[in-house]
Image (cartoon, rainbow, N blue to C red; front, side, top):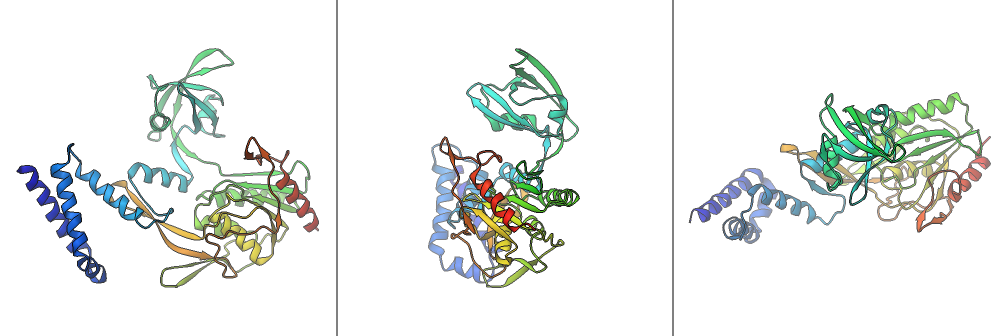
Length: 390
């Protein structure tokens, strides 16, 4: 009987919350759908009082919120519990607190260092690609899930973590004491093309909040080296932050609108250029993995005619999400706008066609475009750029 009373109390609390939170037309809509609201209350009571196993009310509430957002059937809108939301924030900010190392679980008993982040604490301490992490603070990690192991390696800034690794070259176990720091995740590489020293190559893997600062520095370096053209590689770049895309695109289009965002009422907001126009030829390499912010940059360059797109059609993600923090560390990522290119084109689910279509060569079933060698799309981009350079 006590269990049933607790279910009734929970249901009563839900009714009170609904009456407090829902106002105006939303409250009218809920009252007009009283049968389903009644069913919701009944399900909560049934689960909390009659389900075979004890159920946390917190889990039920989280599940309800997840289900509510999932009911939108929008792959880009999602409710995130605290750990998921923290991970998303780290991706957007382009930084995390840890030792700066990429780890992969090679098989059931090997936690392998893929690579230390350049300049990070792990690299400075001497950790190398291929090292197998055996213990973290004395705890064996061989049978541990990789995410759990990573969570143990991460920690508050200024604290220390002890790693025991096996290094094949030394045929021995090595111990490292590494101080945790705030580590920036590099998303931009800039170099002079091996096949033409007049050309700067700019590769961007993600548009996080550090990306445009990295691009600003790369552009300055290219100016100092007096490059005559730039190849910007956005292949398999899934996008990221809107302002990062606007700032980066601003180097490559004249003064004006980079992108327009439109809300559900049709209200439009224009994002204008924020940087001086570089005014040198640019080729953008794109493919089916170039999405969202990558398409904002590509679409602006194509609409203004300041560069050429080479590769294959982009992904076609023309909607913008807003990140909303919730109490307790959770959050919601919700689609709130669509975006239009400077000429007013809606590319959602359509993508952007390249000016020069080039299919990639395949290597073991995957597209090969990790460098200049044996990269037909890069070669065509370089060929195209040479015809544009003065």
